[in-house]
Length: 143
Image 1 (spheres, rainbow, N blue to C red):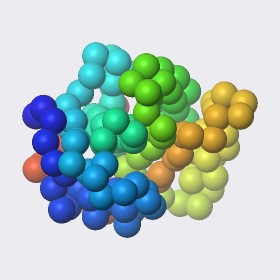
Image 2: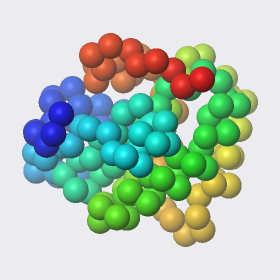
Image 3: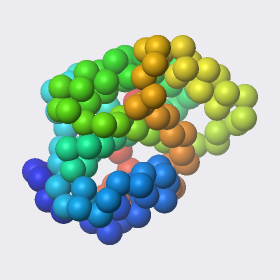
């Protein structure tokens, strides 16, 4: 896709669903294309916003799959974030039917996988419907 301004849907999703408080000018430069790192890790969608924010999105079928992949996704995302001089990595997992105990398992695995002291990585567990405005079609789930 290349670099272009954010769509209103993307800016709304990033601000409302992910809680980003980036200034408006950050949304003038959005790279919504995969990188070699994100593709190799199995990330469905990679969005770099204004050279500050890196978003990795993945749909997952199960809590077990999310727990198994988290460490790799975090390591790859941190590598790309740091190499690009970005401030934050937001890992967005899209899951149907998120039970409280499953969410707690995923959040605990996330905390274990984070390098000590890295407070610039955030996990978001969302229903796929919340990201629907960003998707031209629902991407296939990672199996």
